[in-house]
Length: 254
Image 1 (tube, rainbow, N blue to C red):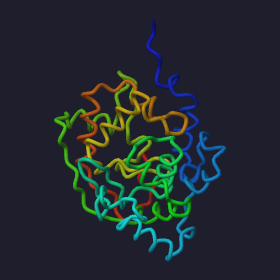
Image 2: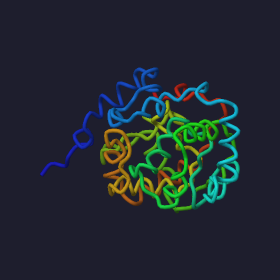
Image 3: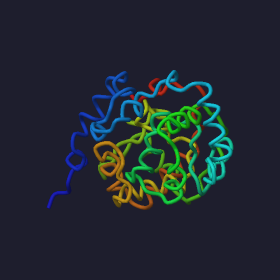
Protein backbone atom coordinates (compact mmCIF):
# COMPACT_ATOMS: atom_id res chain seq x y z
CA UNK A 1 0.00 0.00 0.00
CA UNK A 2 1.34 3.43 -0.90
CA UNK A 3 2.00 5.74 2.04
CA UNK A 4 -0.60 8.48 2.25
CA UNK A 5 0.95 11.76 1.13
CA UNK A 6 1.24 14.80 3.38
CA UNK A 7 -0.99 16.76 1.03
CA UNK A 8 -3.74 14.15 1.09
CA UNK A 9 -3.45 13.78 4.87
CA UNK A 10 -4.20 17.48 5.31
CA UNK A 11 -7.33 18.60 3.42
CA UNK A 12 -7.14 22.01 1.75
CA UNK A 13 -3.45 22.35 2.74
CA UNK A 14 -2.52 24.15 -0.46
CA UNK A 15 -5.28 26.71 -0.10
CA UNK A 16 -4.64 27.28 3.58
CA UNK A 17 -0.83 27.41 3.65
CA UNK A 18 0.53 28.25 0.23
CA UNK A 19 -1.98 30.89 -0.83
CA UNK A 20 -1.86 32.87 2.45
CA UNK A 21 1.93 32.90 2.35
CA UNK A 22 1.82 34.27 -1.18
CA UNK A 23 -0.52 37.00 0.03
CA UNK A 24 0.70 38.00 3.47
CA UNK A 25 -1.88 40.68 3.97
CA UNK A 26 -4.51 37.96 3.86
CA UNK A 27 -2.49 35.70 6.14
CA UNK A 28 -2.28 38.36 8.82
CA UNK A 29 -6.01 38.96 9.05
CA UNK A 30 -7.52 35.78 7.64
CA UNK A 31 -10.17 33.85 9.52
CA UNK A 32 -9.29 30.15 9.18
CA UNK A 33 -12.16 27.88 8.09
CA UNK A 34 -12.42 25.98 11.40
CA UNK A 35 -13.46 29.21 13.14
CA UNK A 36 -16.22 30.12 10.68
CA UNK A 37 -18.92 29.74 13.33
CA UNK A 38 -16.94 31.29 16.18
CA UNK A 39 -18.10 34.81 17.11
CA UNK A 40 -14.63 35.70 18.37
CA UNK A 41 -12.77 34.46 15.29
CA UNK A 42 -12.43 37.96 13.85
CA UNK A 43 -10.83 39.19 17.07
CA UNK A 44 -8.54 36.16 17.30
CA UNK A 45 -6.96 36.57 13.90
CA UNK A 46 -7.49 40.27 13.33
CA UNK A 47 -6.47 41.49 16.78
CA UNK A 48 -5.79 45.22 16.59
CA UNK A 49 -3.92 47.46 19.02
CA UNK A 50 -6.84 49.89 19.32
CA UNK A 51 -9.21 47.16 20.48
CA UNK A 52 -7.65 47.25 23.95
CA UNK A 53 -7.60 50.39 26.11
CA UNK A 54 -4.76 51.41 28.41
CA UNK A 55 -7.02 50.61 31.35
CA UNK A 56 -7.67 47.12 29.99
CA UNK A 57 -3.93 46.55 29.55
CA UNK A 58 -3.29 47.69 33.13
CA UNK A 59 -5.94 45.29 34.37
CA UNK A 60 -4.47 42.54 32.22
CA UNK A 61 -1.09 43.07 33.87
CA UNK A 62 -2.73 42.73 37.28
CA UNK A 63 -4.29 39.41 36.23
CA UNK A 64 -0.99 38.27 34.74
CA UNK A 65 1.05 39.12 37.84
CA UNK A 66 -1.46 38.64 40.67
CA UNK A 67 -4.15 36.38 39.25
CA UNK A 68 -7.90 36.90 39.48
CA UNK A 69 -9.51 36.15 42.82
CA UNK A 70 -8.33 32.76 44.02
CA UNK A 71 -7.08 31.79 40.55
CA UNK A 72 -3.33 31.47 39.99
CA UNK A 73 -1.53 34.24 38.16
CA UNK A 74 -0.01 33.68 34.72
CA UNK A 75 3.36 34.64 36.22
CA UNK A 76 3.22 31.85 38.78
CA UNK A 77 3.97 29.38 35.98
CA UNK A 78 5.23 31.41 33.02
CA UNK A 79 7.36 33.86 34.99
CA UNK A 80 6.88 37.59 35.47
CA UNK A 81 8.42 38.34 32.08
CA UNK A 82 6.60 35.54 30.25
CA UNK A 83 9.84 33.75 29.33
CA UNK A 84 8.59 30.43 30.71
CA UNK A 85 10.71 27.54 31.97
CA UNK A 86 11.10 23.81 31.56
CA UNK A 87 7.55 23.17 32.82
CA UNK A 88 5.67 26.10 31.26
CA UNK A 89 6.03 27.61 27.78
CA UNK A 90 7.33 30.98 26.74
CA UNK A 91 4.37 33.28 25.99
CA UNK A 92 6.12 36.67 25.76
CA UNK A 93 6.15 37.98 22.21
CA UNK A 94 3.51 35.64 20.80
CA UNK A 95 0.91 37.20 18.50
CA UNK A 96 -2.09 38.60 20.41
CA UNK A 97 -4.61 36.78 18.24
CA UNK A 98 -2.85 33.45 18.79
CA UNK A 99 -2.73 33.92 22.57
CA UNK A 100 -6.39 34.91 22.68
CA UNK A 101 -7.42 31.88 20.67
CA UNK A 102 -5.50 29.49 22.93
CA UNK A 103 -7.10 30.97 26.05
CA UNK A 104 -10.54 30.64 24.49
CA UNK A 105 -9.79 27.07 23.37
CA UNK A 106 -8.82 26.08 26.92
CA UNK A 107 -12.10 27.49 28.19
CA UNK A 108 -14.20 25.82 25.48
CA UNK A 109 -12.40 22.48 25.76
CA UNK A 110 -10.98 22.62 22.23
CA UNK A 111 -7.54 22.45 23.87
CA UNK A 112 -7.02 20.49 27.05
CA UNK A 113 -4.83 21.18 30.06
CA UNK A 114 -6.24 20.95 33.56
CA UNK A 115 -4.18 23.84 34.94
CA UNK A 116 -5.04 26.19 32.10
CA UNK A 117 -8.70 25.21 32.14
CA UNK A 118 -8.79 26.23 35.81
CA UNK A 119 -7.00 29.54 35.16
CA UNK A 120 -9.18 30.69 32.25
CA UNK A 121 -12.53 29.66 33.74
CA UNK A 122 -13.11 33.10 35.28
CA UNK A 123 -11.71 35.19 32.41
CA UNK A 124 -14.05 37.19 30.20
CA UNK A 125 -13.60 37.44 26.44
CA UNK A 126 -12.37 41.03 26.82
CA UNK A 127 -9.82 39.98 29.44
CA UNK A 128 -8.53 37.29 27.10
CA UNK A 129 -8.08 39.86 24.33
CA UNK A 130 -6.29 42.19 26.74
CA UNK A 131 -3.98 39.42 27.99
CA UNK A 132 -3.14 38.59 24.40
CA UNK A 133 -2.14 42.20 23.77
CA UNK A 134 -0.23 42.42 27.06
CA UNK A 135 1.93 39.35 26.47
CA UNK A 136 2.47 40.16 22.79
CA UNK A 137 4.17 43.40 23.89
CA UNK A 138 6.51 41.80 26.42
CA UNK A 139 10.13 41.43 25.40
CA UNK A 140 12.30 39.14 27.50
CA UNK A 141 15.55 37.26 27.15
CA UNK A 142 15.52 33.61 26.23
CA UNK A 143 15.71 31.19 29.12
CA UNK A 144 15.49 28.19 26.77
CA UNK A 145 18.26 25.91 25.60
CA UNK A 146 18.62 22.46 24.08
CA UNK A 147 18.21 19.83 26.78
CA UNK A 148 16.60 16.81 25.12
CA UNK A 149 19.75 15.41 23.54
CA UNK A 150 18.42 16.08 20.05
CA UNK A 151 20.56 16.28 16.91
CA UNK A 152 20.80 20.05 16.36
CA UNK A 153 21.88 19.75 12.72
CA UNK A 154 18.92 17.50 11.98
CA UNK A 155 16.64 19.93 13.80
CA UNK A 156 18.00 22.81 11.71
CA UNK A 157 17.28 20.84 8.54
CA UNK A 158 13.70 20.14 9.58
CA UNK A 159 13.07 23.74 10.60
CA UNK A 160 14.68 25.39 7.58
CA UNK A 161 14.16 22.87 4.77
CA UNK A 162 11.88 20.09 5.98
CA UNK A 163 12.43 16.54 4.79
CA UNK A 164 10.28 15.38 1.92
CA UNK A 165 11.62 11.84 2.26
CA UNK A 166 9.35 11.58 5.29
CA UNK A 167 6.89 14.17 3.92
CA UNK A 168 7.61 16.85 6.52
CA UNK A 169 7.53 20.50 5.36
CA UNK A 170 9.87 23.11 6.82
CA UNK A 171 8.66 24.71 10.06
CA UNK A 172 9.78 28.08 8.70
CA UNK A 173 7.56 27.79 5.63
CA UNK A 174 4.64 28.77 7.87
CA UNK A 175 6.27 30.19 11.02
CA UNK A 176 8.67 32.58 9.25
CA UNK A 177 12.32 32.50 8.29
CA UNK A 178 13.39 33.55 11.80
CA UNK A 179 10.88 31.37 13.64
CA UNK A 180 9.25 34.55 14.98
CA UNK A 181 5.83 33.69 13.58
CA UNK A 182 3.71 35.02 10.72
CA UNK A 183 0.45 36.89 11.21
CA UNK A 184 -1.84 35.88 14.05
CA UNK A 185 -2.34 32.20 13.20
CA UNK A 186 1.28 30.99 12.95
CA UNK A 187 2.98 31.50 16.35
CA UNK A 188 6.63 32.14 17.11
CA UNK A 189 8.63 28.97 17.72
CA UNK A 190 12.02 30.58 18.41
CA UNK A 191 13.34 30.44 21.99
CA UNK A 192 10.57 28.09 23.06
CA UNK A 193 11.48 25.55 25.73
CA UNK A 194 12.22 22.21 24.05
CA UNK A 195 10.23 20.16 26.54
CA UNK A 196 7.10 22.14 25.65
CA UNK A 197 7.73 22.01 21.89
CA UNK A 198 8.34 18.26 22.03
CA UNK A 199 5.17 17.58 24.03
CA UNK A 200 3.06 19.68 21.67
CA UNK A 201 4.44 17.93 18.57
CA UNK A 202 3.78 14.57 20.21
CA UNK A 203 0.25 15.71 21.07
CA UNK A 204 -0.38 16.91 17.51
CA UNK A 205 0.95 13.59 16.23
CA UNK A 206 -1.24 11.46 18.48
CA UNK A 207 -4.33 13.64 18.08
CA UNK A 208 -4.41 14.59 21.75
CA UNK A 209 -4.14 18.22 20.59
CA UNK A 210 -6.30 19.09 17.61
CA UNK A 211 -7.10 22.80 17.74
CA UNK A 212 -5.14 23.97 14.70
CA UNK A 213 -7.15 25.21 11.70
CA UNK A 214 -7.96 22.41 9.22
CA UNK A 215 -5.93 20.02 11.42
CA UNK A 216 -2.78 21.44 9.87
CA UNK A 217 -0.35 20.48 12.63
CA UNK A 218 -1.48 16.87 12.78
CA UNK A 219 -0.61 16.55 9.10
CA UNK A 220 2.84 18.01 9.78
CA UNK A 221 3.66 16.02 12.92
CA UNK A 222 2.20 12.61 12.12
CA UNK A 223 5.32 11.25 10.35
CA UNK A 224 7.89 12.80 12.71
CA UNK A 225 9.90 10.25 14.65
CA UNK A 226 10.62 10.75 18.34
CA UNK A 227 14.24 11.53 17.42
CA UNK A 228 13.11 14.18 14.94
CA UNK A 229 10.78 15.72 17.51
CA UNK A 230 13.65 16.04 19.99
CA UNK A 231 15.96 17.37 17.27
CA UNK A 232 13.69 20.16 16.06
CA UNK A 233 12.61 21.09 19.60
CA UNK A 234 16.23 21.45 20.68
CA UNK A 235 17.16 23.45 17.58
CA UNK A 236 14.29 25.93 18.01
CA UNK A 237 15.43 26.52 21.60
CA UNK A 238 18.76 27.86 20.31
CA UNK A 239 17.14 30.72 18.36
CA UNK A 240 16.78 34.29 19.68
CA UNK A 241 13.29 35.33 20.82
CA UNK A 242 11.02 37.76 18.95
CA UNK A 243 11.80 41.42 19.51
CA UNK A 244 9.27 43.99 20.61
CA UNK A 245 7.49 45.56 17.65
CA UNK A 246 8.25 42.59 15.39
CA UNK A 247 6.49 42.79 12.02
CA UNK A 248 4.91 39.35 11.92
CA UNK A 249 4.82 39.40 8.13
CA UNK A 250 8.34 40.70 7.46
CA UNK A 251 10.03 37.37 8.18
CA UNK A 252 7.74 35.12 6.16
CA UNK A 253 9.64 32.46 4.25
CA UNK A 254 9.96 33.14 0.55
